[in-house]
Length: 604
View 1: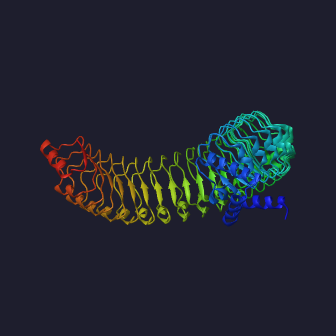
View 2: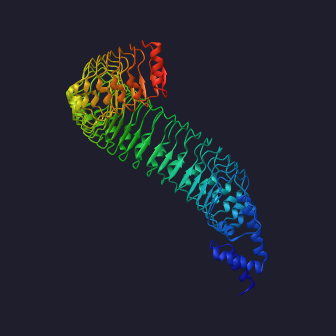
């Protein structure tokens, strides 16, 4: 074996990731050191001390093994520089220098010929050395959250690069050499002050994801249409004013995010995106949709929230795969009857429009699970609403509904029914057929009574009847054995039925601003009650059974006519907030109450 072979074998041992091999190499070096082995150990010692901030007398096995590993994580070590000896780690494949304080990289970074992944996230870099282009095996380069204002043209030499992330830098332009990255699949330029893209961007034939969110692009080059493999294009929060007609050439595009742009119209070529599954146009300036929108046969999610649409084209009904349609915050006065053709639709957002009625075809949406019609001008619902057998959530707040159709009871999968702030004076008896409903919100209506069938809602957890005109509650209220929250504030109740005590799971009972003169003793059976609000009533006394509500922590009694409290109140060990302002309790009694409740804040 030649002298050269012996030296090479020694260096291979010293560069090994196997502890036994390194140990052998160190033994051989100590017995017969060579110039090459001495140099590499000197470099490695300096490198180790610099990057690990540890003073060592001599390199030991574990030190070398850590440096010889194919992956080196030096993130979050407060590094202000990378030693030039980093270039000695020629076996390195993954290097993470993220979250340090590096203002620059040494040119020796280019010696890492085996490097496949380089992470430099969260440093203070304003440029890259031109030697970066020597990393011919590099596949992933992450430069997020630095201060880079330009890329060296040598970046185009990274012929193996697949992912390049430049999120949150200071780039104003890209070098034309960017087009040489023939293997690039993902390019992230989000949060840079880019004002335009070079036409060479169209040469990235393998590009699948292009993120331009929060850049300063007002337009795209027509060459964008050459990115035939592009699947995701993000232009959110850019001042983009129009899309080039070449956008229609992106035949593989599945996700197009145009939220918060200044688009006023879509080109008709948008209909050529036959693989598009998600189109997000929230908060743009669209006043109408092109009829070609109906050609997007694979579209599953369409977000048009916060635009100026006053009508939808009938072709909307051709989106046969659509699962989610968001039209919140537009100016729609009606829906086309073709809306009923959306057989796969599961979520429909229509809140904040000007709808006065719904087409009867709404009942054909047999997969619909969630619909929000809050803040419209609806005066009635079509009877066909009862055909929505899969519906779990129906939000109809802030409309002008005077009644509900009997067919509402056919919604046997309904879990949430929200009807706050309408003009309902009564509920249909079929309301009791909603045996899966968990939340029923009827606050802000004109209800004077409830049907007995309300007690059939055995899954009900929340019942909000605040701000109505209720005089009494039906006896069946006691059948709501799963009820946890009951809001009856701002009504005209003079009494509570005794079977309110059967609401064994009740935790919150709100009764402010009624006309209650007394409480039934059964109130003490509410063992889980934590919050009881009785302010602004006409109570003159409390039943002694109140002391049985073991978990009561808040008791609001202000603005009543109480002259004393029962001694049993001192049994409320968990009571922490007792409000008694504007009652008739004399000073001596107040001192007694405070003595009963040493851990409670009492307000007089």
